[in-house]
Amino acid sequence: MTILEINNLNKSFGGLQAVQDVGFGVEEHRIKAVIGPNGAGKTTLFNLISGTLPFDSGSVVFKGEELRGLKPYQIAERGMARTYQNIKLFPGMSALENVMVGRHTRSRAGFVAGMLNLPATGREEAEIRGKAMELLGLLEIEHLADIEAGSLAFGQQRAVEFARALAAEPAMLLLDEPAAGLNMNETAEVARLISKIRDLGITVLLVEHDMSLVMDISDEIVVLSFGQKIAEDLPAAIQQNQEVIEIYLGGGDD
Image (cartoon, rainbow, N blue to C red; front, side):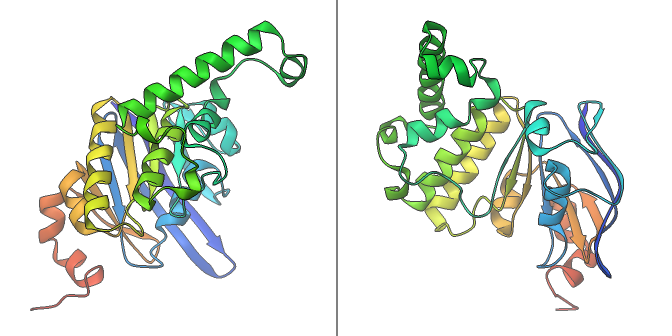
């Protein structure tokens, strides 16, 4: 079943066509990667899907609902979570507290109830704390719960960011260059975590430059160049696609 359907999506900035007539679908419980050279329009595409930027024309349909005009928090409430290339944790808060923040779209107690410290608020906070600890355990980082996020290694911060995104109980997770800035061992661990997230039944769409990671974990790959889709296929077929080799990898007869 298709969970995300992108049709003829367009976005320009002045005279620059950043995304041009891009369309593809993402099947449930799969990992789909979007790759391409710098300036191909990958992050712009993510911004359009997640509501960070409005698109000029086309459509983005998530779980059967058109997302055009919805704000990012409204899209998040519908079950789409996102991480960014630059990790956006609260450095002075613990790993556990950062994950708890991710539950805000699923919390019920309002501002007034919190100010009055009503019993329902305390019960909900305890539930949120318990769920956050469960997610840290699921990603095997519960030992980091009480450590300030800003003092964690980069790969550990990425894992906490994953847990925070999962706290919103998304049906789909958008990952923008999850391996950026990681060493080889950290990248391998991130690849394992992404596969684990998929195995939990969560659909993953990712932008990534690390081709080893992409080829290892992706079920399908979309290739962009200068804002246009030039290929969409299984990883093995993408590796043999001559247009991809020439445009993305800069190869030739060699």
